[in-house]
Length: 58
Image 1 (cartoon, one colour):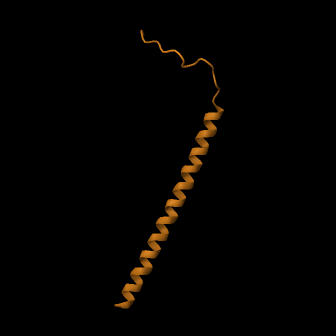
Image 2: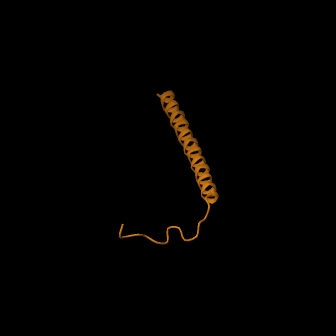
């Protein structure tokens, strides 16, 4: 009985650690994707006046 409780405790602890690591890796991947998107947006040329007017009669 005590062995099964200890084994279940260790198993739950391992599962919690694995979940924490997975979340941490996902956050790192999201941060990297955000930085890449920001850098790509900075590389776009800024053209003044583009998008300022909308042709509603077309």
